[in-house]
Image 1 (cartoon, rainbow, N blue to C red):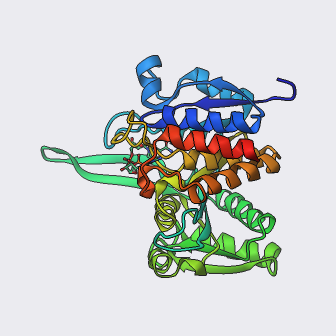
Image 2: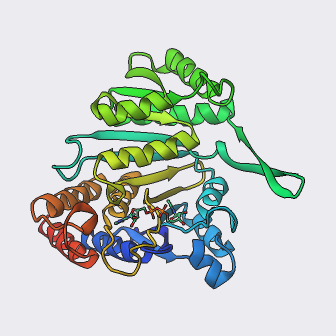
Length: 343
Ligand code: NAI
């Protein structure tokens, strides 16, 4: 393939292989620029290589600096540490960009178009946790430490502010809990306001909002927001919340952007309840592929993919069960490929 872009492809767990296959078919129909290196991770990595993030997968991403991945299963409570968190740390993927846009009218809200920018490496996600035993209870006390650094906050906030400008966004809201976690989230708020005053004033409006109030306001009137930028845990929760505003997890993509690589994925997980049934909605991962095309400077192909997804859902009305439809993953993909071919 002349001028092909090397990229790592991780099918992942549960519905992962089904939606990855559908996404690769859509990219092929567009004239895919990618030359895939297929690798494993998550439960699949554990089963086949004894490691949820095998060295070969890390080596591949080190080479390509670009990956499209299906969801990876992480056991709750015990078991191994999340491969997603390890990937973010390994490749310093400090920014997680999660756009949520209404694609199918008739849902809870019309015309929602929001972006959550989540800090991806710090906060309460660093995994510094331990128990203290008391008497015969080894887990009598659970302790977690959160860490936010000035440098980490600034890097993420700068990314969010630059994104807002390049995407023509009008307002950025810094979401925090600095009234209670005065140090841990106060540093994020303070760094953001200071950065705005010094470098970005007048380029877009800045707003600050406490996480709990933000959750309520989003549900009452999502149109008052544009770009939301926040720390790791709040960003994780808010991005699922905004996914719910636009019709569910089947429609929301995510990009993990870092100094050493960029990894694109759906916001949702491996959906073990529907895995192998052929009914998963591949749209979120396809939209992640559109973000990946944008990232590679291939805006035309990204736009054609997004337009074709819109038309498949709303003109052809081919929809999977999570959107109230009755089509399978394969039927959706077939209809989409026809739309792409029609231009
Ligand atoms: P989930 O997102 O997998 O599923 C939640 C609900 O949404 C389920 O009812 C599922 O059927 C439905 N759903 C999700 N994606 C769908 C799609 N594309 N089409 C139709 N329905 C869809 O969340 P859950 O069950 O909490 O997590 C399952 C596993 O996924 C866990 O092991 C978790 O750690 C992992 N996970 C991985 C992520 C990643 O790799 N980025 C992100 C979130 C969870």
